[in-house]
Image 1 (tube, helix red, strand yellow):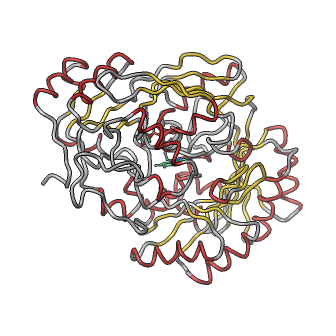
Image 2 (spheres, helix red, strand yellow; image 1 turned 45 degrees about the vertical axis):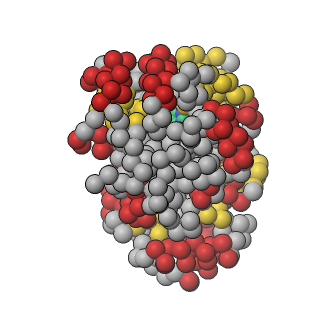
Image 3 (cartoon, protein in one colour; image 1 turned 180 degrees about the horizontal axis):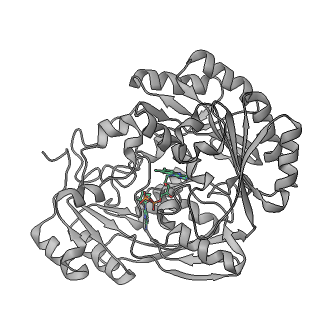
Length: 473
Ligand SMILES: Cc1cc2nc3c(=O)[nH]c(=O)nc-3n(C[C@H](O)[C@H](O)[C@H](O)COP(=O)(O)OP(=O)(O)OC[C@H]3O[C@@H](n4cnc5c(N)ncnc54)[C@H](O)[C@@H]3O)c2cc1C
């Protein structure tokens, strides 16, 4: 049964697409098409319910600029929707097409063009791990990357992500200066290239591929350091939390990761739980190797345990602590018990009090997974260390989840709602008007990932029921 508003693709368009990329790069049916129509939307029981049945009519894999240009030109001429896709690790159904049409898989359009003077220039499908591995011997590293960096593409991270490992020192992706330049392709019969520099890049950042197809990115890098991974453990929450906050705020300690995990989250991490004692709250640090002994001594003096230290390694050899942080924590919780889900929260300076209130109000329904970062757009915090995180939350009913989010708002906890596929309902960023302005210019027929930008005019193929409703729609 086609979903409401589903746009089919004519045999003529399929034949034209095959001429451009080869028959084996055009997928029209079966499990492969289903897989290429989905991302990690299933993290959310609400997205699972609302968009689990949405699929593309056809998926096309492109591997260079010329193939992309021709695919876009013929698809735009047929007025068929286009959804760009990288590695599809997005959590909000960002690359699940609401209206069928063509999914363009850009993961093989993946060149790293240059790394010079602390700037990487890369094609959209370049993997973050490859950028990091090529940059480090030259003395550079990514300013921040998601815990999915082994799979994630650079354009997918910039189109759908926000921050990650490194954000404790460099803030999130929207931090001025981190994204230096985008080149995007417009969706028209004769596609054009638009170049956006510096602050203008925010027009495309986190826009879910709704207002231009990223064909080239430039990111500023950070000087590379030798990092050490360290676990700190304690049966007591308060001293552990205080130590995480103290190290986060200590400008003399260079760091890439400060994750705090309330017990029993650590018990979900099967491959690494042998490295720390049971029933403990945990900190996962990535800190400058040269500071490690001093940090361990400071932790010991406070009665905290330091059960595990491992050098960072390139190329990657498992296990890495970062594989259990950011939104990987939720993944491990879901593996342990599928009834967990999550929120994305920004806490105030009174975060200790906020944790207590949430525990009192929702006993047994919330476990704190915190990420300390420099700045937090959810809370309007710039340049100072902020306590945010991805709390793991028990899902019982939609009403209860809404109650939890509403209570968070009431006590001053900001939420970037992960249970919606609409950009504006995620509420992470300001600047939707500049994103819409670019959409008008770069996607005049409203074909790009249609429906995801709520403030854009309804796409031509919209029918009643084609736009799913979420908790706050
Ligand atoms: C286990 C897990 C952990 C995660 N951890 C983090 C984390 O630490 N930090 C974080 O920010 N996110 C995190 N995420 C979310 C996700 O991994 C990141 O957003 C990721 O970087 C997306 O990259 P991708 O290549 O998979 O993008 P995709 O999911 O393929 O795409 C993301 C969005 O970008 C658009 N897009 C893709 N390519 C282009 C293009 N060329 N032009 C225009 N738009 C494009 C897509 O249409 C989609 O809307 C996590 C997700 C999972 C499942």
